[in-house]
Length: 327
Length: 242
Image (cartoon, rainbow over the protein chains, first blue to last red):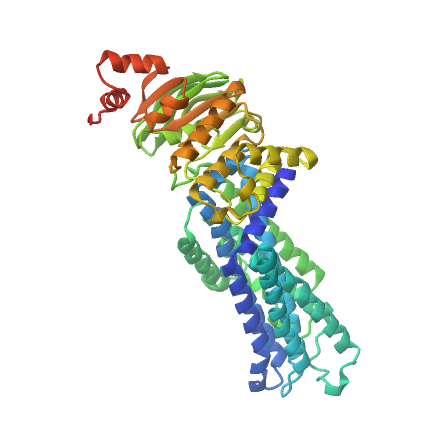
């Protein structure tokens, strides 16, 4: 158990230390932070615009992060032979695969957590159609700068990883700022700039919808980790993108071809995750609370998908001739 | 300590290790030699349990590595080729990490890490990231992780590859120091290394066993043919004598 924990922690740390992980996160955050500006071009639909765009950004960047993390911790270890060091220790192939996937999932969870906190903050920034909350906007971009500065100082003084320290600082700053802002807004403490009551979003509506993105990115993480046992980063990314696009439309075409609810249609749609099921932007824009039963169903289907892909990952890794470059 | 019986490995239809059998006891240093592509690294990987064989058995300290891999692997120290390490870790953090994978914690772990750093002369580099180290230092870090848990079996793939003469001597001295309580296999194609540290020689060519005996027997064979070790190596592996 301790071995599994150590390997997972190390895999997660490797992902967070990757500068590209930081770059992708910051790019996603900047995009999410800029979406409120576009609310000036829509008619009383600013929340919908910010929600839709931010969730799409999180999902798409989550996919890229998943592939990157898998390539960093699995493909590279296989290629340069680091896996030989680990496999020569009292570590089974099964615990190696499981711990690598867990490490990847932890880092992706952190990625989505920060993006979701940013989405929450971004929704609060878009106060109404014509005004943005300037103080919140400053806090938002200030958080990115402070976190990066913290990472830089830690790197300069104690040679710690810039990327991982900056990411962890963002994971602390963003939810704190978002939670404080939500409390301030819900109690009307910022009434010097009264927000449109129709656009205010209660945390109980917003948070479950954002949680759905964790499930989607976890599935992507497990799929890309499975593919990483055999494929290089480009092949992995291509297949993941294909699965993402196919998963978006397959249920529609399956229902049209075989008829909705038929066994053939169900079989067809169960092969590829239906990403629409995790997409709660419409629900958010209508202020509808997600039923607990739906949440549980999605959680169970996520666990099932992940279990199937982990099984496949183990099967692929079992026959893997380790360390291609050193053979 | 190491028992290998009829070990074979195929990559597709290509047989890279063909019916390899050997035995190494505590105190032995077996020089596993052969030309490039002979199947040495593949054999090392199978013996150390990181790659399953196509056929045959490997026993470490009487434990079948296929049946009880974790118990068998806890007796093995493996030094892979090319020093594949976690480059972003410091030397101390990396050794601590590998020590934990062997199940050491607390003061015992610290003691072992300190002792290994001292044994491998890594004191100056202990706080540095592995990525910033020279090739020689990286090799020593890799060696350090393989001896941290005092293994009964030490399997080393090209241990002195790319090192300068001083570093080579240090590593060889360390191997000679370790042999007292350990069965050692060294995969190499440097005959000078065989002469310096090995007590036995095992010659592999195109996956097949060409010679298995003591170093003196190997030398005697060369003398009988009126050549040196390099000449005998060339004769047995189908190469040309220089």
